[in-house]
Image (cartoon, rainbow, N blue to C red; front, side, top):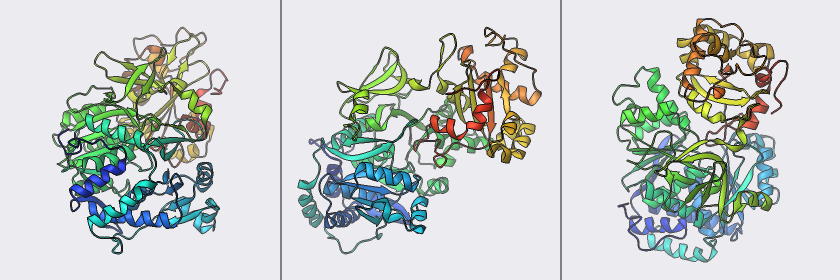
Length: 602
């Protein structure tokens, strides 16, 4: 690193130290840009600190003491950042809740966390419905509920830098110890009920320092923030590293505005999940411009320098496109429980399909079964009020991630799936669903994929398809799928049957290869379908032909209905929530997974 973050002889012990460093070194430098009522507003570091001071005083006046929990229920907005820093400043514990959560779940989490206050955005759908029903105050009956909104400029707070420092010195004794909980993040991950992950200032600072050692950032960088701030990926890799590096942050206004705002603001750095980069790839593909020089910069702006990707597997086709377009795409890996980054690539040190090498302050090893284990100062304190669950994943400082991986001779980690998601064949062979899924989403017409096993251990999946791409490749399929979508959404098993593609039939009858399942007694691959079906099936098989034959797709259902956070089938970082998919897409799966009259009970 060459910027002033690492030139200080004193290592920060709290994120708050980074904010004070910025305020002391460059108070009049533009720190933050956000849209307020459709107009861009800028805040210098001093103006941002003034807003933090105002919010902090309100918290103190409300009786917030060190360690008290205060929740935010909001979409991304500049005020969210201010309240986050204010809570750190006065020693509160921030409990960020996803904007898409329904009121009953918000109430359960507030109760579990023991929150004393709730900051609510008027733009959250659940909050609006709770207001309309007169129930918003019932979400936290024993505490207070405020509107998260703040004035874009507050002229009553002290205006000089020295006055701010004087106020902040008085806050120091209120702040939590670096090794105590400073934030409580509820995550359901890909399965199960939400768990409260307790992170400390030590955890967060260690991860910031480790990430900045892997990726060099400069004060002149302009970052566009689009990830949900409620997720630890954004908390650390957007918000905390922004202040540590002293660059400028632009708060995105929502996914419907992302690409217009990116073209307008011309950032140099973007953090996102793979789905965002797939959207970029599909935009270029739709214009038949994938191989045109500069087609990516036409989408992300001519100043884009680095893109950072995490949260889910990155399709190889997207990675290859970024390489071809000469835009650096850094891959990484981590979990909420690890603050979150465990591994990261670096410019000049990247490998296709890998998620980087361990951060300089994180140890990684593989258990005997291939599970990724991590140890270091960024590992969580534990799960809030769930000691037994904490003991299940933490042993002598080693955190069991639940992910399976491979480490190569250069220290690069490649993920191969989740332990609990393995499909086991009758012969004891193990299939990793994500290995199939990440290959299929490389196809232009497949946007999302979910695979599980039928009762005979054969991989069957739901494919969310791109309508325009499917119309070009298989117009009959696209027409019928469009026509019957209403029946499909009504969970009609009969309509589902019409959109099952028996991939195995093409494998056995339409190619020189014998069926990958010809050792399973009683299998009848059935007749080969028409030319469009052959075309689709052959692409699915070609995409997975580097896998063992028992991992090739057996049957798939095509649908236009995407998995989403709103449906509950995606996490905030874009990972599949498999139990929810099995529950909410049960009608399609019941038909898809039946075998000789049986239905999988997974």
